[in-house]
Image (cartoon, rainbow, N blue to C red):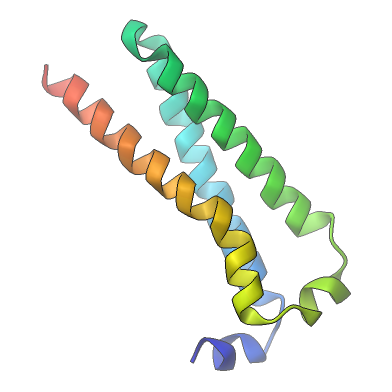
Length: 107
């Protein structure tokens, strides 16, 4: 099913995954900045900002630094693994940041 969706345009899946990762990294960067302002959460905020910067640089490199021929020749499962190894930790950091910020807000 995914290969049928991507079969029409092989650049569609990498672009969707990359822009999703950039959006998640931008949100994580905002949460990291908010956590840096809090006195007790500076280490976690710094880690979040570092992860966000790494993810944005990785996805921008994948979007603009690779040639189209390399992206077109990659199977779907390799594309999902390549982009997902950065996207999954970002989602985990986002979940943890939301949980921490909501707990701090209730106090």
